[in-house]
Image (tube, rainbow, N blue to C red; front, side, top):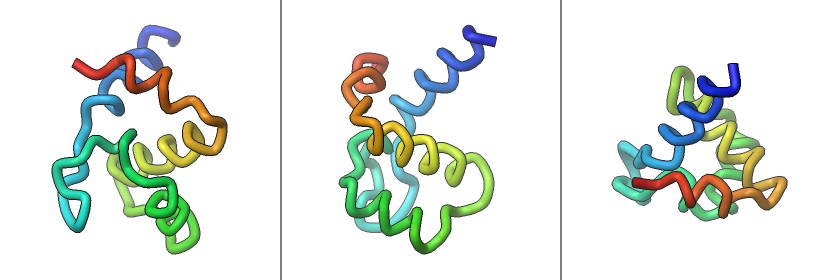
Length: 72
């Protein structure tokens, strides 16, 4: 189980935003206000929504640096 979680965090660290103003920016680097906006508006469905929800929790707890270290 831990190995799968590590893999998911590694994928999160290396995933970029596929559209919009922040297209091409790593999800973990998205501004907090943007992630909070999504939290209030509703995250997209599917994998991207799950990843943005996780970024929200990571930013809420101040753990961004731990994920940034996993970038290739």
